[in-house]
Length: 124
Image (cartoon, rainbow, N blue to C red; front, side, top):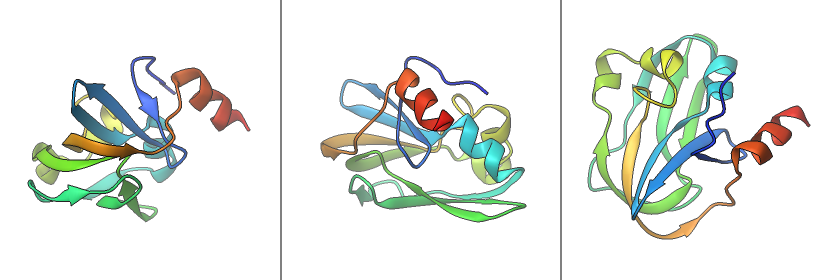
């Protein structure tokens, strides 16, 4: 299982990459492994505002349907439309081609963990 050091993580197993005021979201390698084969990703609409901790997307796997929560508040400015035809990219590259949405940050942020803190969280 991979836990990149340049990302932050939530207790709900989302990751976020912050670049200036733009945050890119996805689910962690741990989350995609636990879900199994991803068969569908419901993406948010571009222009939608999301609050930190709000469900903004849905990931459906062969095992379960799971809400995906926004790590930070903001406006959705881009979604990964490739996931509509190839949802399995979340399984094959959770931190790269499997990103879900990009948000222009506007305020509140969930409590985010570093890679080391997330690794410790997973071991508990």
